[in-house]
Image (cartoon, rainbow, N blue to C red; front, side, top):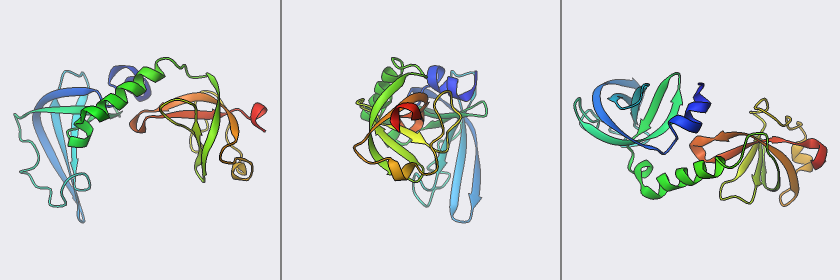
Length: 192
């Protein structure tokens, strides 16, 4: 299974996971400090808990990072290169935040990639079009993701014809798990 399928079905973003710290590495670049804490979990994949100075305190020190042998509660944040990335940040562990991810996964389990939808343009940006699909989560036709599943690439002049409030036809192409968005392809035959 590729990273996308792992995040879609096995290790869902926002899913609780716990484990014991088995070691860590400290990385420093100018004023930026990162700790990659390796955690033994029930996953078959290497599990890394990331602490960085932008997420926590600028004076991130060894005392803040959980030491070897510490049991810790976390949530899944990402999966890449056969590594599960975790978070123990209080905002990520908040029950409301976890419920939003659960609700997102519940919704996407009912919508297959390739489903055609009609939406309303919420906002047009240089990188794509935000679309209201009449779901609790918004869609994005992203010019940077033109080769996922179905749908066509937005033409370079999309900002001249795509207007807020207009109807637009699109195709569910993929899911943006980390920010709970529905990745869309453009369906030009019905739109223009």
